[in-house]
Amino acid sequence: EDQVTQSPEALRLQEGESSSLNCSYTVSGLRGLFWYRQDPGKGPEFLFTLYSAGEEKEKERLKATLTKKESFLHITAPKPEDSATYLCAVQAGSGNTPLVFGKGTRLSVIA
Amino acid sequence: DGGITQSPKYLFRKEGQNVTLSCEQNLNHDAMYWYRQDPGQGLRLIYYSQIVNDFQKGDIAEGYSVSREKKESFPLTVTSAQKNPTAFYLCASKNGAGGYEQYFGPGTRLTVT
Image (cartoon, rainbow over all chains, first blue to last red; front, side, top):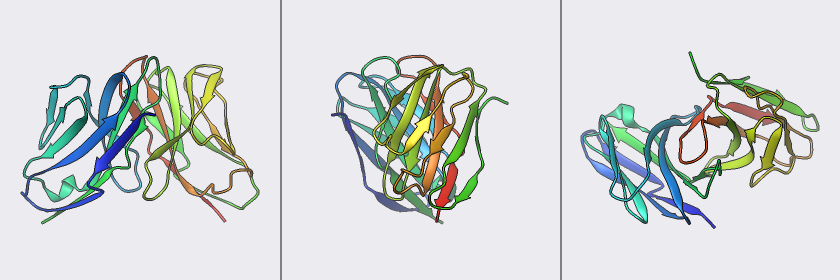
């Protein structure tokens, strides 16, 4: 069974204090790994797709990396507006197989 | 402006009533999905549809029904058989097969009392 585990469940950072969120996965035949940001009461917003080990993607203060067993979302010098829940999901198999989501990491950045 | 719309944003119903949540997309995406989100839990798949007039059950389909008569629309009905219907419901769509990202709507928060 495909599984996605995110850690930590919650993370509190001071503004400017860099850190990383972890997403470990167990899937057979990874087609893609996805990171989303979700603000309270809103739908998830797509951030990155990673397809193969060694791949990296960057957007502003965020950088996502992928290995064969896990992905990291690195947050450099975070600001209060980066506070949100970050969701990781994987797609395995073929066709339009649905994504399998982790439970998310709730990030709070304090000014 | 392309995107996914869900209506209404908030919905209140009495126990025992069926209720239909709307999801429309103008992205010309083939696949559409319905998820349920509860506090402390991840997104759980209710139903998905890869093409018009076809849909599959997800992990928690009991008490829900869907239809896909048009490519743009994928309404979800929460029936009175659903034991705990109060939740945040999210619709998503995806273009093509393979490892492409899903895009989500803004969600509908359903409260049943």
